[in-house]
Length: 66
Image 1 (cartoon, rainbow, N blue to C red):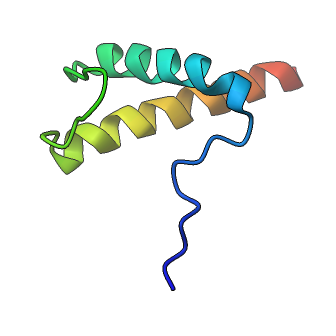
Image 2 (cartoon, helix red, strand yellow):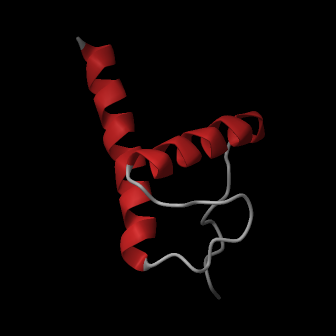
């Protein structure tokens, strides 16, 4: 059986904030992300959005450690 845990928001109240974060990250890397279906994105574009999100989360965590 396939594991279906991907893209599941663990805290439903955070869903809107995560969506805003994703859109902000997309703008920063120059990816034209739209609400809803984005299946026309290349793997590089999608990866750059996700990578930027992870980079910002790590930076935020590191700032919290200081």
